[in-house]
Image 1 (cartoon, rainbow, N blue to C red):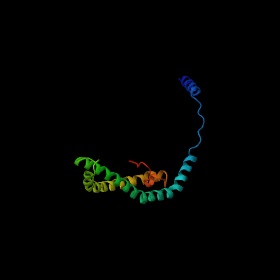
Image 2 (image 1 turned 60 degrees about the vertical axis):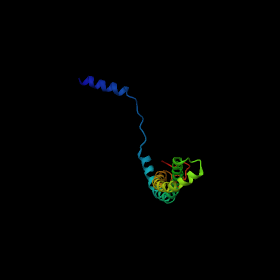
Image 3 (image 1 turned 60 degrees about the horizontal axis):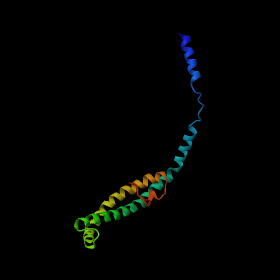
Image 4 (image 1 turned 90 degrees about the horizontal axis):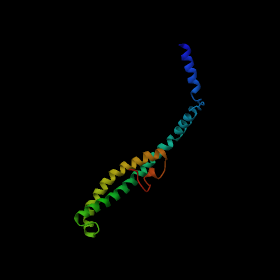
Length: 136
């Protein structure tokens, strides 16, 4: 019995592919940890600057786009957004609604842009909500 088990294990050992020893991952982990430690203050300041600058920019961008959207929607309900009188009347309601909704969205998306983009690439246009397309 022992002889068959030992011969089976020997045959199995001969058929298994030879695996080359892999380099130790500790060096790469230590390098990544050191880089993250060194870059932490830069990322923290980048996120803070992104919030200070990016949130007002996002509020302005969102409030203006929402105001135009609400004005067009309300104008379509009272005569069409192609004509000046319905558009003027709809702007009395559309602009305040757009400012309220845009402010809430701007705070949310400006903070989100600052945290996500500021931690990946501090001080980039995305962290200040200045990219052509805002993160949704």
